[in-house]
Length: 257
Ligand code: AMP
Image (cartoon, rainbow, N blue to C red; front, side, top):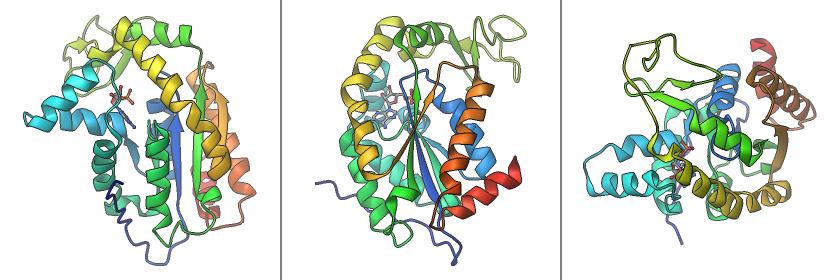
């Protein structure tokens, strides 16, 4: 069994935060929607993919291993992902809740997260209201189209799409003029593999979230602004009916709309 211990930051008696785990196939818009929610709720946006990419840049043995696995579209072993994530979640800015982008991706990760949360007095009661999985549903054909056109700034990681969101100057980032690159794992064969893994490993955990926490499902095919609105409405109505401290998140959301 994994030795993970979540050391969640103290909240100085503030009301209870919630964790929103944003799930969906690669290219579903998890990053964009997680960032929108994080801004509205004023909580950190923690992407397991970005965290892993930053560790993968390291020239250490772990860095090399991560680079190899990510380049071919494999999932990173649960223990390694959880170690990286637990370090980040222990930081003080996570005290008011957090948006987890791309986590959990396996049943093992979902269970480890829940076990970790349940150890904290903040989450020990009524986990159903404090842990919400938000599932962005998107068809495979849309994913392949989206990812084959995705380009990333080599310096600041700003994201573009050749057709729907092109840069002002071809091949150059709008913000810093650096060269745009294709993410290694966005190549077609790798995308198809990532989709297969998503169906095998991640789709089965949706029913787990229905049982153990809360699951919100939205149509990720929509334009991103329309989708953001649908997500906010879904979260508002869920938090409105909340009976626990999750209500404080609802008022933050109201204040920021
Ligand atoms: P993303 O940026 O979310 O598309 O993730 C990019 C890659 O990082 C994935 O294809 C996996 O190799 C790895 N990764 C990200 N999150 C996880 C996770 N929760 N579990 C396992 N591997 C992950």
